[in-house]
Image (tube, rainbow, N blue to C red; front, side, top):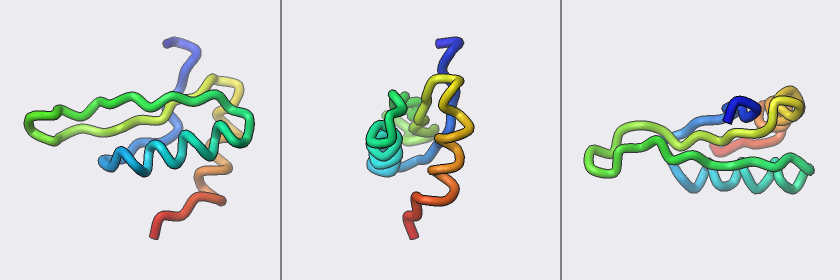
Length: 68
């Protein structure tokens, strides 16, 4: 996992999946890690991508993805 870097985190699984899908549509292999405790519902869902895609992924997340 050392080549993978977190580019997004959220408490909502569907938002993490949307970000993952958009990154993959832009040619960046991504994964969602569930770091949420299922019993207490604390923690985050994290989207990770390869190190070489971090700058582009961050730009897409900041400028092109809006949930509100």
